Length: 142
Image 1 (tube, one colour):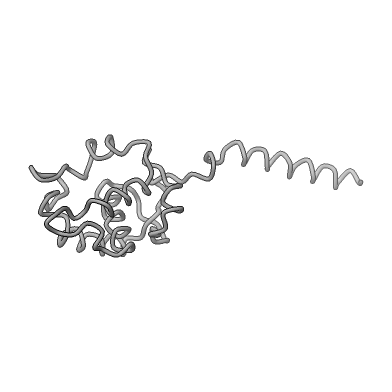
Image 2: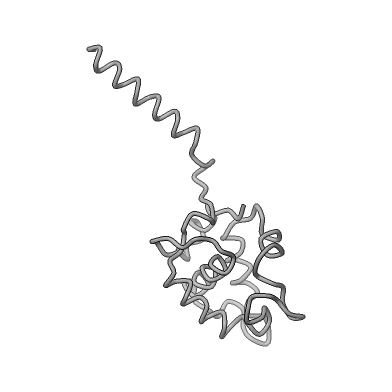
């Protein structure tokens, strides 16, 4: 092996070690990493108004029927949980009776989550939040 090749191989190995040391554990993604689009959040806001605001307030500030979905109380309640946990909670219990929980499509629930992220000042990105439970399980609310 030539000296140039040995140096190049060592540099690549060092870069790989650095990237491995700085990468999130087990491929986790931060909810603060631009994981939804503005258009998706806009769709989610319309869905929220029709399906969620009666209990959670027009401004996501909660009511006697449902907790606030913005700021500290919401973020504290979901800290260290995943968006898959939030999706499951929404799908299995929202909207509550007399409506039928789970009646929205998977994409509509994902759009509402995008609106929740936006209202909690998480930045939008270039890719829509998927309604895939495996993908949502990698996104942690930190």
